[in-house]
Length: 318
Image 1 (cartoon, rainbow, N blue to C red):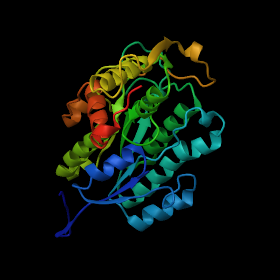
Image 2 (image 1 turned 90 degrees about the vertical axis):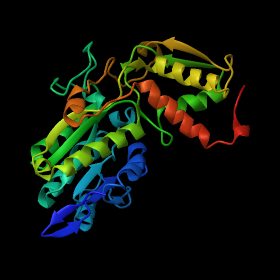
Image 3 (image 1 turned 90 degrees about the horizontal axis):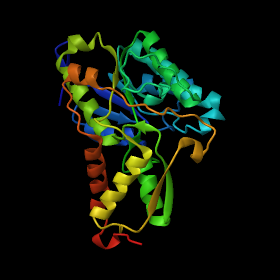
């Protein structure tokens, strides 16, 4: 366990994690417990829609590191609840950053590939100009900029297509629908990188560990990174890979469900989404020595973890 040395006394860093019940927040409680004293809070303890709640919680905990995983993530609903989405994603991170600056704490914040418009045919790098095309992306970009303007020590990680063994995500939705339906329509012209929530948490653990090894370097940190595995796929390709895993492990049969490729226009919906939001992770790899797997490896491990908890007699087929 790493330690700060303050006035000749040993002090374990206090790490405050927001959104403890979310996909990433849940995993971080496991991965960061080896680095310090973890205080994980939910909306009842720190409500990002209430600035005073944010201030009260941070001043009470007095963390050395704040990891903000809480967010308004309902992309479609954000178009209707613009003020709430902006408060949680855009304004609240700035409030957290101001409190972090007063305490001298490091703020770690998660953003999204949806800050980009998806018109670039090659992977986006951190210096590419954001141009969000929906309210969710606009609010997340506002949060990034509020942190950067605050003057606090920060790391911002843009992540994409997050899935895990809990919460609302594409992998769990596809698994459920494959058990319920005979045919599925899945979009094939939106391309990105599926990212396992455990990979996100483990990479952050490595970054914090290396920063704590160099406390002088930690005093000057203020960086934006892209974080996701190698490779890319469409939602259709992602669903096909999930189906193949289920078939290979005899959870479904080859004729259990037909997956049909459709376009975004055929799918419908009023909210625009980027067509190509693949993120380039070279900067993170170079600065922290991170070595990413291909996205398929995370899907295999996540599904294996899910099914290892099921009784062998619970295997499902149609």
